[in-house]
Length: 319
Image (cartoon, rainbow, N blue to C red; front, side):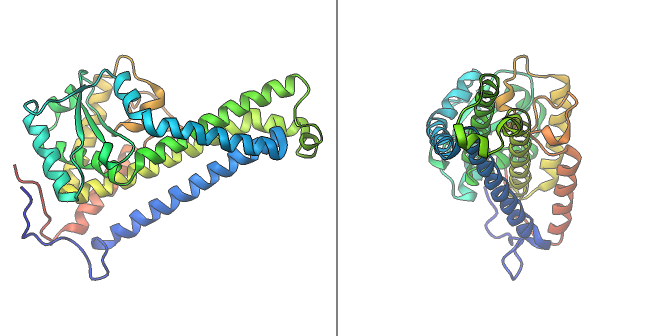
């Protein structure tokens, strides 16, 4: 149960101790700027390929893709990993943790899924809080204690509350549209270009070269940056919800080591951003192209958050 008599660590200005609220607002602002940059990049590419008509076509194309992703992405990703829905009489410990956290945060109870793999990990999916699902692997249940698991699930529920699934879907869709348009630009450059005078006015061969080479790289960098900002925010929100930042920090350490020891046999790269730790974390990745922030930085922020909470009675889940 939640200790209702505990004093919540809110300052007189309404923020979490020491400015955690300001950090969250900054993450939101950065996400907004990155999404705007992605949209402008998509419009610019459409304009380079086909002028005003190409720009409008690109926007319509992205909207159609977003619609289908919004409604069906949760079912697709759960099927990809062979996730099985947990029945009411199964995994009582996990169900209890999810139930208490959702009640504490005013969220509907999500569906719970189990993925039969020894890779310790978890993710949330669903188009909104009323249609959300939280998936955990067999490996994570064998690795973490109740406090650590509570921190992980609180992190995933924060993704649901913050609408990160929708934000990630939009970012991935826009990036996918940019990659497709870049491929069209390659063919256009090979066969004489498109767009007539509009194309010549917008840079001709140089414009097509930009679209074909530079734009996809830029789109990937922006998409990964959005993913990293949402992870930072979910860490902060999840630690606040569970009341134990250090437990989440401990869980991240264990999960990172666990993924290296028990990597998923057949991970899908397009879904890597959904997991709490990168399923490819055992491989060397450049920071700019990583779906997750550096583990050391995440832990550092959680430890700082714990220090800010000292001297306050934090509401915690009691088992």
